[in-house]
Length: 423
Image (cartoon, rainbow, N blue to C red; front, side, top):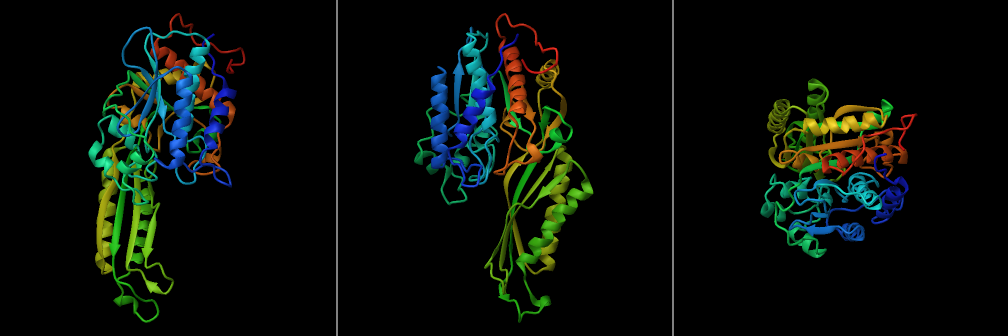
């Protein structure tokens, strides 16, 4: 039989990491480069050390540990992130890192040899919840984002990334580009309802849809809500509301897989009886086709300018993040699908609606992702949950593909039990 993962060991690590930054009502808050993130990093690095890995940290705080192979060379890399949103769950990101640790521990326990090295990594500020853009650490590591520009990014709390790295001593000596893997694999919860709805255990991820994050600022004039006639107002809040509705209409007109979200909207002076002087909002547009995404961006901005002009307001925008759609390596995607099939696990091919570190590696090495179901499609939420049986299935597929990519010495073919369940 092929090497089996230990689901109880993996779940114990997930629960232990979830205690760091735990919220009173459930879930976890472990924002990038916060004290909680520092504690989480220390714990994961200790686990890496316990497994005998060669640990390296680069200048933006990405950390990886390598298990030696029979030959030197680029490692087969597993990874994700351990930072969370402000009201996150235990599985988003952490599953990919800790499943990677489990793969390595299972290889150690079996005294297994691989021709290529095998590694696991966690990347700085994947969520983008404290510092924009998201996928920052992996983006810098893979040359998609400029290091010096990212170090100067100011977080939502006014702290520069450079200073946040120093505050928790997260930056290491390794230069940008030090991590050059043979291939990259990321196990992740789906963060959507498709797999659960279709009663499937594995999502074979074909790529990541393009992401456009824009911050729009509308500037009008504050005025008394009772004495200022509607025709004489310069209402920034009303203009922002029209932009939000237009974003929804764009998604409706384009149809799936186009999505649009106004995630933040702040008006000032934020008083019940004062016409808003300013509105600052974010618009998140996503699509699997670059040309269609560009059309959505163009339409939204033209409409926003029209709304501002007719509302007597000024308007500006700035890009928070912009990533083109990414397709994963066809051969590696096929390997994920073959492993799921061999294990008797129900599966389907699907794109990722969320951004992931894997998309940063895709231009530079064969990359792929494995999804497992999210209960009720919930993620970025304290009620995020994936059943241990589903986690076991995804981690076992990860193990099988890693063994194939790393060339497990004298490895048998994939096998299933008579019932088609995991051994």
